[in-house]
Length: 194
Ligand SMILES: *[C@@H]1O[C@H](CO)[C@@H](O)[C@H](O)[C@H]1NC(C)=O
Ligand SMILES: *[C@@H]1O[C@H](CO)[C@@H](O)[C@H](O)[C@H]1NC(C)=O
Image (tube, rainbow, N blue to C red; front, side, top):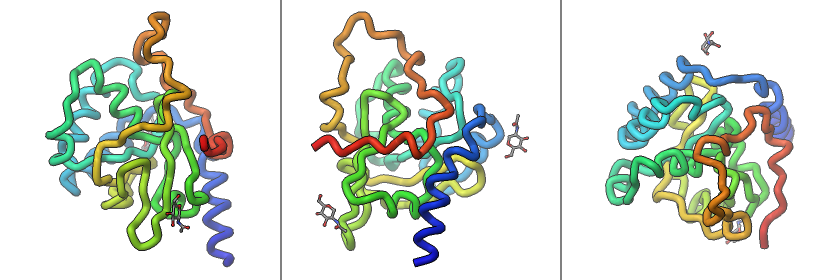
């Protein structure tokens, strides 16, 4: 019981103690080393392309959800879609598996792309799901403040319809929708959409 309480407290304070984090290239390199050690090469390549664009990543307060190389190799992606792909496959706060496990079943959290949300479903023995994908290799990134988990599929987003503004020609250009780095876990308590 006490341990659960500690986990909850950790969850609710971790976002706030690190809110002043700006992007740290050293931490980012360490996270990518962790990813390579578990053979998430494709995801690392996409991250490097994104990172080569100015001001793409603005905080290390991130959890990446990484499809395997096999999954990525079957996914159609253009250079212009890399930003949205990576941002929709990340959560703008640092979460280890234990944090995710202690979200109430069916919780909805924002991805780093404001129009897209990720629901967390605990299917007991079948595992923990983020939208359509199962977390298959948890806690790959351990060295830096960035967290990452391997997932079974590229994420699909059915819940994002109410938020979509993609067809709006007045939409700001890519990159301007980067989440504010001070976003904390507490502010993530978005009610379920159903
Ligand atoms: C980046 O992170 C590393 C390790 O966590 C730390 O030693 C270094 O001082 C940080 N650099 C900056 C610019 O904050
Ligand atoms: C979580 O919700 C899903 C469906 O929304 C359900 O199938 C599953 O059994 C629930 N898990 C737990 C641990 O209650």
